[in-house]
Length: 485
Image 1 (spheres, helix red, strand yellow):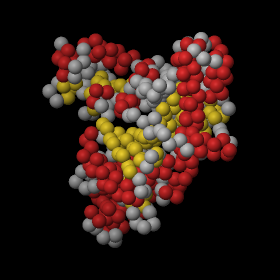
Image 2 (cartoon, helix red, strand yellow; image 1 turned 180 degrees about the vertical axis):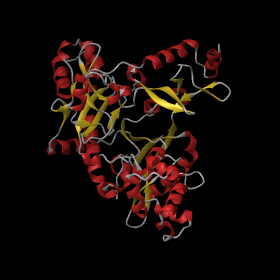
Image 3 (cartoon, helix red, strand yellow; image 1 turned 30 degrees about the vertical axis):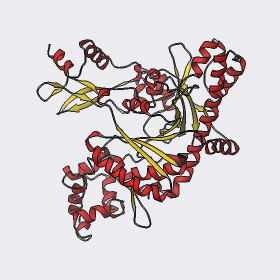
């Protein structure tokens, strides 16, 4: 009865609650890998001439609207995990020891020095550094631990100017996402700091327009509360409650942003994480491969549209369509009826950059088995693979490439109408994650990842891109890597 009352507070029926509990308790089925995608079988590698041709296609196509979509909802707290341990417990890891030695080299030191009002001599003492780091992270200080990662100062330039991750995305967007004199960027931002973020973006917008002699069209959205999901206590499988019996609903991972993406109207959308940015001196190679991926999308999309229009007007050439599909996609297209071929071509399209695997955590490109028995190209996380299946783990460990989250997508069909992206999500590819709440272990539900199960039923092409295009900042110590200094 209590669950029924709680459900009315969020307009959930008892049947919906029962279904949530069933899924969280049982978990999701594991993905079944057929093989890892490799060069020549799932991943494409283009020659210098081909790369230049695709770049030219994109640069010379001006009658399209382009959006740069940047998921930036996450707080920066995880960046500073080891610094929190140092401040609160005095623990000094190797990373922290090096941080203390290079304290003044971090881009945000100047702001810290100014706001903390201590002399550099005072800040040379370890205990003083610990207090300064506490000031850096705490709400009473600079609140770096509570601000979004996009507002952390990532890079210091020779003229002394420091850029946040948000600002770097402005500069990068101006280099490849400008069409018709407009650079459109959409950020997903955290609700709790939205006012600060919006003020920061507005300030950047004013100076960027003049600096790049272009118009920036900046928008932002929040992860929708309707995508939040309930959680269960791990011990007794009852709902997690707080504040007078109200049910706890948690954000359901980056897969929830599929709804934000679905709301955008661009013809071509670049997707890239907030923390994967570099200083200006290293941007050219990123720009080159963004243009390459976009050119591939435009060429493939043109052919997809042509075949779909031919199907509509009765001039469909089956063999020609099959030849085209075999060139670009994975599947046994000879077995498909004309209607099935049309359905396969009339889907959202994504071109995904893949870098050579260098041991970074995260997903990779694989061919996975589908219900109908044919494989499809997917980005799969290690948590989606059965840890007790040695054969599956062997395929997982043999992955040659890694997903850096470097996508160009099209969400419109051959008639110029938007696809409803949620219709192409595989709802069986979500994840049940272990978390804690108020000191107790809980099990929470995450929706299929944005570029994992969220795009499961899309047309997919993987393209090798250089490792130099992948420079994430997962911890604050990454800011001292050569590509960020």
